[in-house]
Image (cartoon, rainbow, N blue to C red; front, side, top):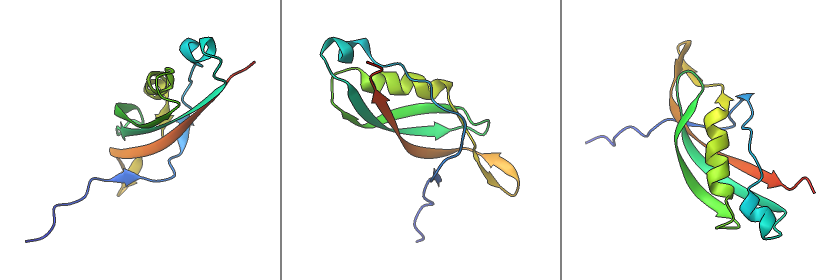
Length: 101
């Protein structure tokens, strides 16, 4: 019996519009000046992202994960194409945060 097809995964995604993320107030209040989140999202055929899951968040509990998910909703990626037609697929990408102070 053949193995079930693996879901499509986009590697090295091209951004049509970068995720606009805001530095979490919770992190600022705790004196944290940087953070990093890895997300796994579904890239729809129109380039929008949905169904985002936090793969990792460092440091945890400072609000970086929710800020990254919110920013991903406003981003647009270049979707993969099959025979010239845009197709949805999942993507892993890293969002880095740096305090402006």
